[in-house]
Image 1 (cartoon, rainbow, N blue to C red):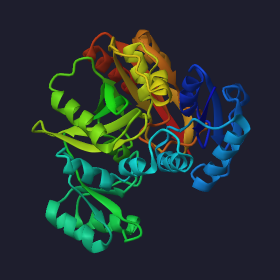
Image 2: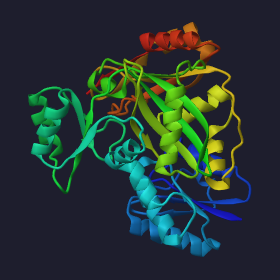
Image 3: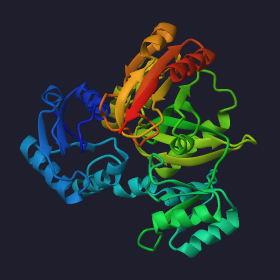
Image 4: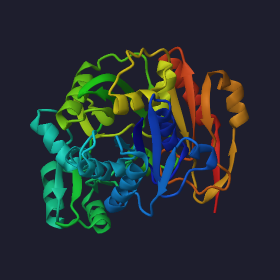
Length: 403
């Protein structure tokens, strides 16, 4: 029996989908490490659970994994899907000499400046960037590259604490907010323009075996800057003119050294057609993208991840059978969700194409993410059909807030 430790600070539904996939594998005893134990209905997935105060503390994780190993005859793998966990999981694997990605690989993916240095050294196209350790570094970057550009944490994710710097005044505001120093370097990046996409891979034994591409409408940063925008993502069946992007994505995964698992890369097709990598993460994508892949390919892509990371096996080839997309539900205003209108009208208009829905929870605080407070996943035989359905969804459903 293989003892697999799955680490997740909080037992959120999206996080536990991956645990459910691990539990379906043959000859696996699933062990959990949480800050808050899962609900009893999900607790049964785990043979044993260890609760820690801080799942991002390496010493606490070492104690938890060591204790679970002592109880159950050793540990074979330690896994987790959250971006913020990857470095500490690498440290645990280093300590116990476990298979999987080590700390050095995790740091290369996590530190976006080092990541871009490595990719550019390999001849792969990236956004121009620099580490800012002082106010003077920021002024020098602006002088070299001009406005606008972006400032964000070196290990940031999800556009959080990301600033579009469009003028000297905006630069002063971003500097006041980020306070770059030798101890707290901040990443400055060229502001990429064009169409933004994601590129997901499933990699086994260091070889990307599967990829999918999502198209963002509009970019996440634009959504964060404009309350009235709703983010929409499509996974089209027709991928014309994507050969260069696919090659760049595959080469990036190989260069950064992932052995087994999923990656999530964000990239731009510039207005002149050139490809530029934004960043790449050593984890499955969030924002329900794995669910989206599962619908498009009529396959359990959560289990495909589990098979790759634990069994080092690939069950493909997977063939995309549907054009799919997801609309993220958010609205203008602040406070808590007061209500959601237009759901019945949307259901009547396009309900036959809706696959899954998560409506905003009445009374919940408004999300600070571009993913909003809910989502609708749709499916259609054609790419244009998906676009039309999503337009209907975002123009009909409204989320209302009140303080």
